[in-house]
Picture 1: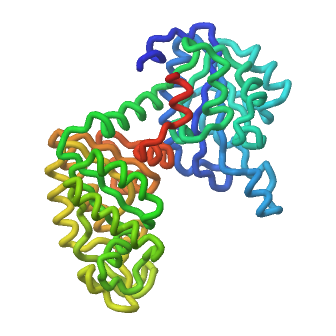
Picture 2: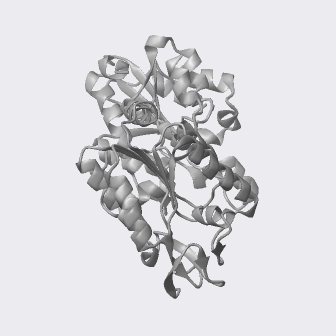
Amino acid sequence: MNQFNDFNFSGKRALIRVDFNVPIKDGKITDGTRINAALPTIEKVLKDGGSVILMSHWGRPLKDIEKKPHLTLADFTLAPVAVYLAEKLGKPITFIADCMSEEASQKAASLKPGEVMLLENLRYYKQEEKGDRDFAEKLSKLGDVYINDAFGTAHRAHASTAIIADFFSSDKKMFGYLMENEVKAAEQVLHNAQRPFTAIIGGAKVSDKILIIENLLEKATDIIIGGGMAYTFFKAKGCHIGNSLCEDDRLETASNLLQKAAEKGVSIHLPSDSIIADKFDAQANTSSANNTEIPEGWMGLDVGQIACDTFSKVIRNSKTILWNGPMGVFEMEKFQHGTKCIADAVTDATADGAFSLVGGGDSVAAVNKFGYANKVSYVSTGGGAMLEFFEGKVLPGIAAIKQ
């Protein structure tokens, strides 16, 4: 899968779908991780003597404006990205305010080697999310070669992420470095995992993670479950969970998952204890409790020390690790210990030779917060896309290039 690296872009206009859906506050980018991740792909094209046309979405402008009439399209502009990108690349960026305009066509046609152009938010047009073929075809005419480097949107069959590939021959459509690395890391875990293979699944809701847990029952030796979703499993077992988060309509689902794991010989590790609080608040009173008997009026907001020790031992004995979701409300200092313990164990195992993949917005935020991003094997930029990949689904953005 090194077609991109071997391709010579000299004299070519590379139309690159990137994922620049980054946090922006007061016109400034507060986290440029996704932009920075795409820089090697852009720089390779420019070094070869090619030019670059970048296209991305940002937010859901049409849907949000419908709900909040005080908003306008200008509130969803990619203009701040152009400023950030110019600083990173050390060259001016031509910003096109309308991706469907005649200006876009003319500017793209006249691009010189080494020049970079950024199109305005693709989701200004409803045709993007609808996967409109005419919209995709018009975009395709802007470039000679199509590169998909947006793993974060690979699970969407949108015009610019999947449909557009139909208008390029197989030798002129490819993954960029970021997409190649994402797919390679995900496939290593899903299809070539060394055992023991431990999946760490956290987050608030069982309903968000049912499919990934079911698919991992076919792959993993151990599954660690933490975060708010753990209490649904405990209630399903007849335990008292106090005011802890629980999806009562998923109790049967939780029971079925535990039964399936037992039948398949997969070890499900639930946290035996929790750090509990009398309210969901950074200043709440806290205590600890066994998860079979959390007092009424109290809620579990982090895994406890016994759970940390148990989970850490499992992780440190692993050869392959997938981490998706935090162990507690790590954004609050009182409830970050469990997530940090997991991060420590994952980095220790990685140092001992395990392959570790961290994915999902909160997990990535956690390793970044604790300064561990460079101490794991791979940090994925795709939240929903990575989740669907591990659910066993075919991702349109990947299939469109591979077919």
